[in-house]
Length: 117
Figure 1 (cartoon, one colour):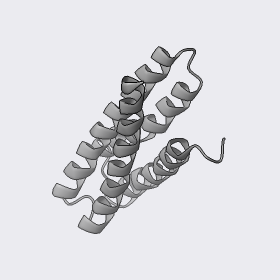
Figure 2: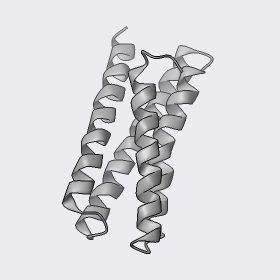
Figure 3: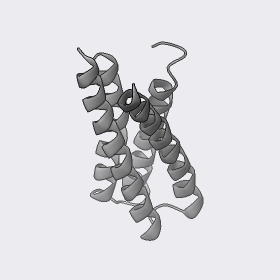
Figure 4: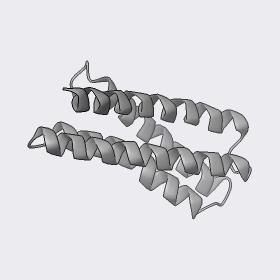
């Protein structure tokens, strides 16, 4: 992993946090449906970033990046829902939402740069 690839590093760290939240929700809250949705979308962000980096063309890179952006939006939704249904505390959720927002800004900025190139 390149040391200077911020989106790659942050999306991986976010995925690790999502896995831990999933474990917490299953073990402590006995919640298995919404948490699975969060796990899928939250780990998909970084997986699609990885695919984008290994893309065969700029078009392929942009397509995978767009999927990452959509997955980050979906993850944002699930976190809000888990917060509003009291599965996550306000503090837990807001911390995750802050990181999801940061990923959305980074990915959106990369997309904008590509579009304007």
